[in-house]
Image 1 (tube, rainbow, N blue to C red):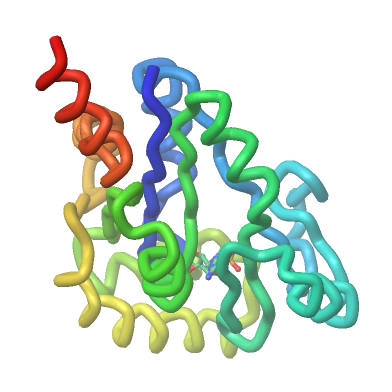
Image 2: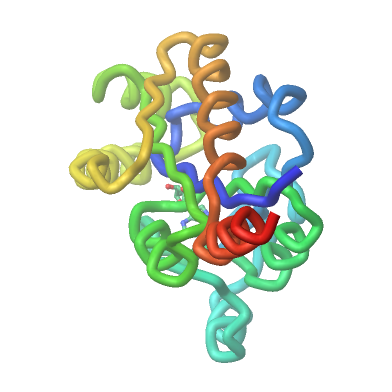
Length: 203
Ligand code: 5GP
């Protein structure tokens, strides 16, 4: 299968990981890019599975060494995507899925735009987002308020994304996600397009 990059953004609480889990056996071989972050693990989160949890200094050393495809400060903490692992997955022909914020999306797009398909995922309403974040009970009230304010800002960037998925019903949202993943695989990069034309003309 052809490799591709699929970038997902949207507020924490949108249900991005539940959608990916629900669609996992229908989207072919994929690699979910595990980001590095300087934020503290939440209860139940596992280092190397949910994130690579590092301290601020280690993250800043990574920035200096050019380890990140993109990074951003979100809610006061660093988050970033390791370039090496993404390259390896792309070389292996896998669909690489990122869950990154809007700033990171713009940075990744500037570097690898022709390889990227994107989707913004969100709950059906602002009040539902607040409800889900409170029900999750993993963050303090001030952290929840920060996330809600950030979501209000991020939603204004929705026009920069190829697709929007509203997660009001998990099965339906997962079905839409499968369609988006298939579209990502069908998209040709500039290099692939040139090669296609060359081969087609000489065949
Ligand atoms: P959380 O703290 O809820 O896990 O994530 C907070 C935000 O950080 C989410 O909007 C998520 O998309 C974003 N995020 C997670 N990993 C990365 C990353 O590697 N790069 C960027 N730019 N944002 C990220």
